[in-house]
Length: 335
Image (cartoon, rainbow, N blue to C red; front, side, top):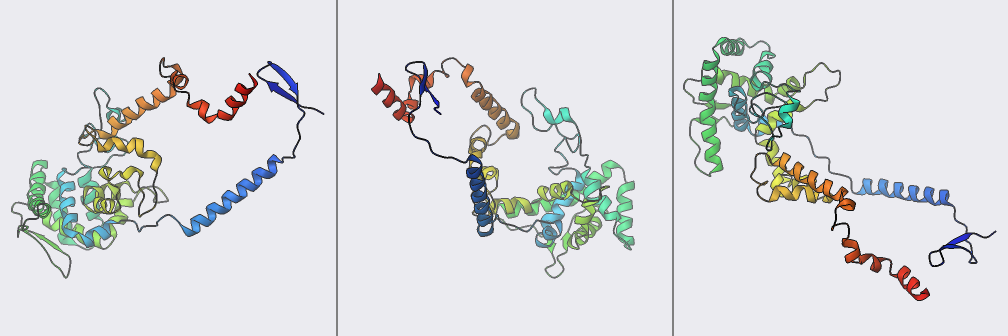
């Protein structure tokens, strides 16, 4: 039995007079899948991805108690990053936007979070057998909103001054101190009302691990929603420090990096490169701007066959002849 062969020169089929060789496609497929699977398992055992221990609020409060208390004070005052972020957590900001595009605002609040209640007041209510703390929480809740804000801001101000001094390598003010033996934080703040007592109770709750559990409480059987503890920690300094140490920050090409010295997602360089240049580098709306740029570039790539001038570049720069040089050499020899 002979098989036809297409002849481009004559424009018709020609009889095949060459030899034949057996080829089992299914066998080759099984061999390839088996070899790749074995190689994947072997490489996983030898070079597995790093398994870093997760960050917890308990770890944060024990290692950086002043930063924890300062962050908690901002959550109570409503001045933290989460409190002023906007959708999907609250209505206190417009979110990422560009020109007339406000996608976060359009989608609305899908995961409502009140930082003062969710991160401070409600967890403190779970502390048993502490009349002093319960009295402080009650006093705070019945006070007018203006008074509560003044208390929280008065307590947060010395802590902000303390952290600013550390960032500028200056001597920190003596209004904030920490007990090295107990890890308790003392803040000398006039006009703070019951806030110092509340913050001391929250710090003790956090160090015991109770705050982690309190922020995970939900109606679900399985506790898989870590949104609240992650947002609380992201408002502080723990996650940022870990990310910087692992080269995962935006200005460190973090989107395409992986923890440790393992190779990351190098194919994401085209996305993360925009975060390294202006105006994206310093823009508060960098995420949506980068998404728009990548959307335009992706659309342009898809539409290459329909763009005059661009679609003709391969004909004007015949790299294809170099790739298929044997074909064109044989064709030219037959001509």
